[in-house]
Length: 523
Ligand code: NAP
View (cartoon, rainbow, N blue to C red):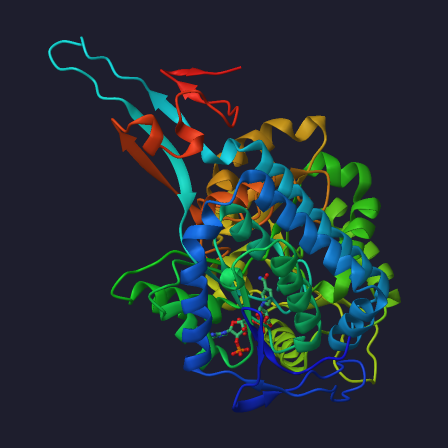
């Protein structure tokens, strides 16, 4: 497929007229063709008008039709073959195997949402049948289902060009809920975005859906992004990126005459706890596992282990020594963009001023090479220095040595909201872990034992969320099938005649849903 450099507004390809966005191969600094002229507020209005026109039709498509649409997107993405992989590798510097894996995850995610849509549990049908004889007042017939919120704006992420971008988790869950989607492509991978965008548009056409179900825009966040978030036809926003970007979009959404929810996933340092018995039993193996997790994908994961917390002593010294033996063997890796690379270098420089360097990975000469760093500090310094809590996006982590369990608790209480908290423990650590658990539950969206936080399963029970600044709304997840609930709201129908009720709520239950009927869950 020849890349056109154009936006996709419904089924139409249109050129922008603002400053051109051009992908840069971060491994070579070479500019990639074609240029993508940025859109303006008129393009945003056009896409939102189409999305609004499509909304009522799309949200009432049958469960089967919507599930088939999601599966068709997956098939269309796979049909792009190596062209998609080649382009994504060139635009991100990520290894080929990683991009292939991410394509599998993206298509698998779409199919998982298709299964969710078909099952219909998300409609959350509740029926309280009428009780005309009830005293002192009769009860009306009440029926509740969930409907789609409206058109959703999705901001593609820099660090997942497929799984968190044009047809990634936010788009898949919004489309599953019945919401048309308008994507603002991330400027770092416009060609990958165009290829995937065309696959989605092709699926819209093949499934006979209204064209406004999907549009793809290019342009600056400050113009196109803000115009999108403030367009009155947009009813929710999905975002993955920086804390500053997420806050700016949330504030713009809150300042609208009609404020809307923004689901922004922003900043997390993902504390890892090494409990004493586990550390004593396997300090060396833990250190090796930590180095592997820290350096995976140049550390450019929102779940990268950016903080290690343990009680000081000989076992922690063994852990640190093993890191200093293994980290120097880790090659520098190409980071996603010059901006992310320079932000990483700046973050490392800031940490260097406030903490001691325990070990570094290999340095490299080429462009955008991220060198891994592990720092060490004492709990008292961590508690009194805000610089030590900031996310450094990349392979950098800080070890915090605590005097005792009380200090571990104080450090934990001091943390901001997190996507994950990891506990490495043995049987003898269970009591201290249990004591810390209430704090960690307040702080993080996912708690894991004897594993590493990088690697996020797409499943029904997954939570990829957490209190601010991990996300802007801790009540939801951006990964896994529960992500669909971000884009739904309940509607109750009182004393409706059967002929006027949506199929999900009709008396004969034609969709065969497991309803909550007069307080009992149907089998
Ligand atoms: P970003 O700068 O937040 O950009 C993400 C998207 O938001 C882009 O489309 C951007 O548009 C838009 N945007 C940013 N600021 C905006 C504003 N003030 N108003 C309107 N739109 C705005 O994130 P990034 O480019 O992916 O990476 C930068 C940094 O984000 C990284 O160094 C890292 O610290 C962090 N990051 C964190 C995660 C995570 O999961 N925690 C993931 C990725 C990145 P424009 O680019 O066109 O302005």
